[in-house]
Structure formats: C-alpha cells, structure tokens
Image (cartoon, rainbow, N blue to C red):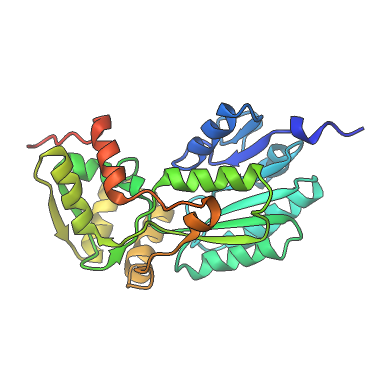
Length: 281
C-alpha cells in the first residue's frame, strides 16, 4: 500500500540556492516534509550526473526545479524533458519550474515540461534583486565599483522572496496547475540606477562602469569563474539584455493577489542586514 501522499516530501532542487533555500524554509516553517536537492545531500542530486535524478525523485510528491547554471544553456531542454519523464514514472504529481525571461532555450525547456504529462507550473522570472547581494555582484559592490557590459537598458528586478512565495504556493496549493507566471518587479530601472540606490541606502559611493563584453570576460576569467557560467553570462549580457525584458508583468499579482516587493524594499532590507560593506571607502 502506498504511503499517505501528505507524508511524502517535496523535492527542492537547488535547495541551498537563492530561491531554493527560501522555499525550503517556507516548507519547514509549515511542517511540510522536504528533501533538499543538492550534491551534498543524501540522496544527492547533480544535474551533471543523471544517475542521481531518480533516487532524488523517488518517494517525493512534488518538485521545484532550478536548473544549473541556467535554462538558457545548451541541452537544458533535453535535461528537463528527461527529468520530467523520470518524475512521471516515479509518481511525482507536480513540478514547478524556475525559468528566465527572454531566453529562447529556456522557453524550449518550458515546452518540454508542458508536454511531459505531469501537473506543472512555470515561474518565468526577471533578473533577481539578490544578484546584488548573494551573487557575483556582491564583491564588486563591496569594493565600491560595479563593472558590467550593460548601459541604459532597464530591468524590472524581482525579489527572490516573491519567487519563493509563488513557488511555495504552487507546490502546496491547488489552483496553480497549468499556469505560467511572468514574474517581475513593479517597475524597471537600469543597473546604474540600481547601483546608485544601493549606494544611497548605505551612505557610500559606488562607481558604475559600463565596460566592453571582452573586458567583462577577462574579469570573469581572472576570478576563475567556470567556463559554462562565463558563456551563460556573455549570452545574457549580449542578447537578453537588449531591451526585450524592460516591461513589467503581473505574475506575482496573479499568483498571490498582491503586488511584488519593490527594488527599494529589497535595498532597504538588505542594507539593514549589513552585508554591503564598502571595503575601499
């Protein structure tokens, strides 16, 4: 006899990442069994090792899918198709996919999930606010100088807390099946404007430099960034950040019934945490 579905855990792939760890916290706070999908867990999960996929899925009732390094990379769509098939074979009844805006390969991966025959929700997101505080931009900010190959193009930055709220709802509630939520903040600003907002919140000067893509690649290599991630970032800054994603969307409102957190809200809360500490000021 099968165990009670309510006793089965929710698998959170990338459960230690920006969105995943927030989802894990929400599940645990609500006393919902959770299985963290990462290389260090038991059973482990690794996108680069297909032998880990089934053991991580086995016995779970639903799964949050965060693909590394990004759905925009080659072979992502095939991986999502194959992962979804394994999930279906193991009786996993709901998959929630984190996707990216304006990325053709990501949309191919979305289509693989939609065609898979499992119950699905897609959360298609703009650039995370938390990339300024939990990603590669944190070191740049804390050195008082942000250098990116992007000029005046504006982005409706989305707070990872909103992503986690929507993912939690999609994993645990009815009514989100077959929904594609286009997730952005409520307004768009440039990277330079975002940098200036952070500088104002912490009372420090932070210089913004618009650099060439060649110089950006050299900088990433110097920091020993993995090649696959370098390729992803180059594609992102040369293709996706061309203005196609400037408009705000209403995915948060559709899923949760309220407006998304603003970039100012994010900056205020993050500044209070003390993580932004200018080292050369």
